[in-house]
Amino acid sequence: MTTERSSSGSQHPKRLVFAPGDIQGPNDGGQDIHNIKSAAAHLAEDISRSDTSTPTSVMQQELVSHPARAHQFVINPPLTIAQLHPTNPLHQFHRWFQDPRIPRSSAPETCTLATASLPSGRVSARMLYFKELDERGWVIYSNWGSKEGKGHQIFGSGFAVSADGRTPGDIHETAALNEGNRWAALTFLWSLVERQVRIEGLVEPVSREESELYWRTRERGSQIGAWASWQSKVMWSAEPDTLPPPEELGHADYDDGRKELEARVKEMEARFADVDEIPLPPFWGGIRVVPESVEFWQGRASRLHDRFRYVRVGQTDHAAENFKWRIERLSP
Image 1 (tube, rainbow, N blue to C red):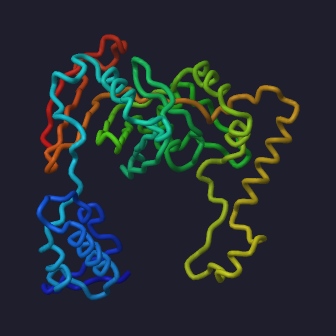
Image 2 (tube, helix red, strand yellow; image 1 turned 180 degrees about the vertical axis):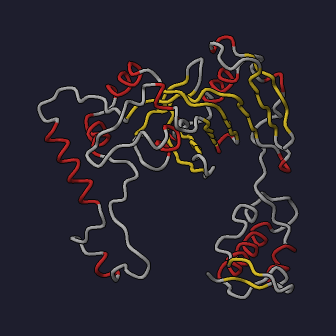
């Protein structure tokens, strides 16, 4: 790895990207902002390309002398407690999710699901679509049969799809969660309206009936794909310095593992050729993230953002309609 050495002798990795948003600030007025941004962008690119730039180099000193500012959050009026739902963060989420300024084409249901392995504590995250919001929490449907990743983390090592596609149980059985880590977090970011929602809570499987209902809404090709995919299984790999030359990689017949997946799809198509309704796989279905805390973030100028958090108080085994919430304002 290429490193840069500072005047103090310490080293840090060579920069590939430097302050991409901070060099595209709005006009302060009275200055040639176009020239300022162009100069700052040029300098930032030079820093990324240079093998010798250091924190005290001429380039960096010139960069920080430019008054170009980072993007400022100015779309919304101040967020106050008066604008929040007084008793229920799920209802508050619904308000924000239905904001008419967010086009449906931007897929506002996109979220990041973060989970962690036990006992290592290693965290992983992935982008998913949430499909349902009810009075108890956020529901996500997916393939949970991976030996690594979210399936392994939530349901434990004892629940994983074997080489022949079999599973030791059904994810809709609560017992499937006994070996895994039920803690998870969801994050929604709606950049167009400068808002973010963070949810932390415990995972529970939805009922098989709920999963069946959503499964029936999926097109047949997606159902075949769910059966065909042994999610996160390594289908191809290349050890260091063993990758063929580019001209060979670009050849139409070069197989980088995709053919195995396509063969699986054909196998499942043949398997279900005479079946009108493809059955729900035991490793596929819905989980619900039941919130312990929900934070609503709204951007403000000078990074003095508004942050309000709902924290569930009292017993955790109450029915959803009996959840009680403490509301807190957090420092930005």
